[in-house]
Amino acid sequence: MDYIAHLSRDKKMKKLLEATEPHQLKKRKNICTYLCASIMSQQLSTKVADVIYKRFIALYNGKEPSPQQIVDTPFDQLRGIGLSNAKVNYVKNVAQFELEQGMEAKKLYKMENEEVIAYLTQIKGVGRWTVEMLLMFALGREDVFAVDDLGIQQAMISLYKLDNSDKKKFREKLLQVAAKWSPYRTYACLHLWRWKDNTPALKRPKEKIK
Image 1 (cartoon, rainbow, N blue to C red):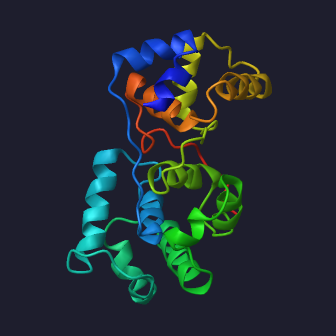
Image 2 (cartoon, rainbow, N blue to C red; image 1 turned 30 degrees about the horizontal axis):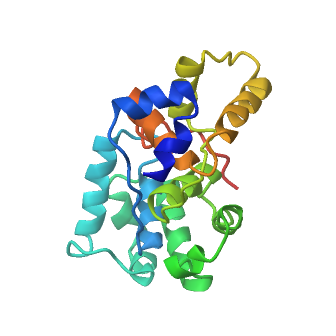
């Protein structure tokens, strides 16, 4: 795969590439459902998040709901599957945004990464990290670097022996190292997660919610 040769120029990243299988990115069509599931998983283990999502789908006879169905679902019914008051509101915000503004995959495919981030972070409950995950796992973008992801940070501290005592300098160093991986930074993130066994759902940073 093209990304392997490019990332292998980084000797430390090359070791990770040799130790794990290549990755392939997938694209999803239902962006609204993906965002709702992402919100549900905030600050939860993957196992608990999966249980809640299955309960969510069960509310709609096992099928992904339309945005209108989510908006029409009673608040208490969504609370009943294990969502907090805030998460119920955020999920409904996503569905309402889909109805009013639109977030169809074909619409987002036409936007640059930063445009997608700016567009979707208008939704209360959706932060930059969440959209970065969407860019990677739903839109299949190859050059996304989740600098604020805790799992990525931990992996890079270990792999590149970075000092994180000064947060500003640490962030700059992360970006500096990752710049060499462009235009395949998404794949680098995937290998870092796999290497440290840090899934995004477990290592979500605390996002600033508007």
